[in-house]
Image 1 (cartoon, one colour):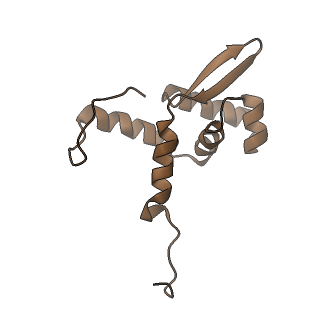
Image 2 (cartoon, one colour; image 1 turned 135 degrees about the vertical axis):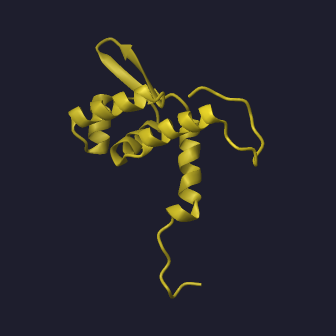
Length: 114
């Protein structure tokens, strides 16, 4: 992800930022891709590693990695006959951590809780 100028907390996003952020959020708005990003938070992995750790089929992992790569969320490097994938930007994990703490991401409370 390309870095933009630091903005103040209450300052609205610019049009280009909105489009770029929407693209990133669309790329992450899939359980399989989120699962892969979560695994890659632990370090680089091959497609075989990702298949084994995620329980997803190789064809699905490859499709999802392509989308994540095109969205600049993951990067790859070749070493001999292996391709290793890693997160391009660690802030994606911070964003997901923040999302996990948002009230809307929490399970609904039963009527008995205060």
